[in-house]
Image 1 (tube, one colour):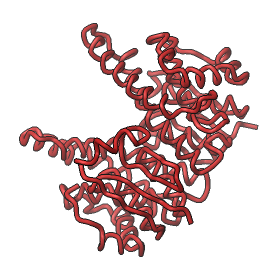
Image 2 (cartoon, rainbow over the protein chains, first blue to last red):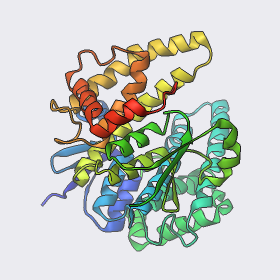
Image 3 (cartoon, rainbow over the protein chains, first blue to last red):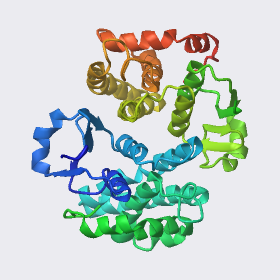
Image 4 (cartoon, rainbow over the protein chains, first blue to last red):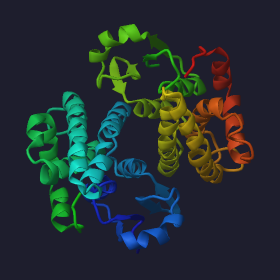
Length: 205
Length: 201
C-alpha cells in the first residue's frame, strides 16, 4: 500500500528538510520525491502556487514549506504539548527560517567573489541577530521549547547543519544552548539513521 | 477565562490581524498601544526586542503570526481538521511576500521611486496574486471548506491596506469580493471596524 504522504522537492535539504526530519523522527513512512532542475518547468504549473516543496495527502496538495512542516508536526504530535508551547515553537520557526533562503542564495547562487563577500557579511549579521535572539529564549536542556523534541528543534537543526558543516563550522560555540539542541537532535537514533542514509545533492544545503 | 494583553504601536500594521481575530471570537483583551517614545524602554523587556507581544496569564508570546495563530485557535478559527488548518496556513504564507512588497512601496520615502514601485505592484505583482487567490476561494466566500477561518480574515486585513492605494483592485473577482463581504459582516468584526482607532497604517 502506498504511503499516505508524498513530499516533492529538489534534491537539497533547504526548505523540505524539516518535514523529512519530522517523518524520520516519528518513524512515519512517506514518498520522498526529488525532482531535477530540468524536470521543474513541466511540473511547476501543476503545483498550487508554482513552487516547491509540495505535500500530497488524501487527494489534497499543500504548498508553503513551513505550513507543510507544521502540518506534519501536528500529525505526528511534535508541534507542542500545550497551546503555549505551540505558539513558542511557531515563534522560533518564524525567527529562524529566514536564514534558509539567505544561505541558499549565498552558497549556491552567488558566484561573483565580490558579491559573495558582501552577501556573506549580510548573512553573518543575520546569523548573529537571529541566533542571539533564539539563544536568549531557548531551553537549557537540549530543547528550544519544553522538554520534548518539537519541530522547531528540527528547523534549527537543519539550519545549524548548513552553518556548522558547510558555511562556518564552529559558529554554534557562541550559542551554547542552541549547540545543545543541535547535539540532542543529532544524537537522536532515528535522525542519525536518516542522516547516514539520506540522498544528498551536489551541495548538501 | 485567561487574561489577554496585546502590546503594539498605535497602528494597524502587524497587530491588526490579531485584533480582528479577538474581535471575531468576541474575546475580551487589553489592547495596549505604546508611543514610539516609550519603545526604547520597553524593547529589552520583550522576548525578541519586537512588538507585537501577547501576554497570556503571565506568559509572553512574540512574533505576530505566532500570536495570530494562537488567537485564531482560541477563537475557533484555525480550521477544523489538520488538513484544513494546513490549507489556511498555506494561504496565509502565500500572501506574505505580496504584503512585504506592498509595505516596501508604502514606506518608500523617495517620491519617484515610490511611484515606480506602486506601478510595478499594481501591474505586475497584484493581478497574478488575486487571480490565483480567486481560484483558491470557494464560490461560497470561504477559502477553506464551508466556514470562516482566519485565512479569510487575514485576506480581508491585507486587502484593507491594499485597497487604500488600489481602490478597484477586487473588481471582477467574485469569490474574493464574497470573502470580504462575509468577513465584514461577522458581528464582532463589524463592531470592531466601527469602533477601532483610525490610523494611517
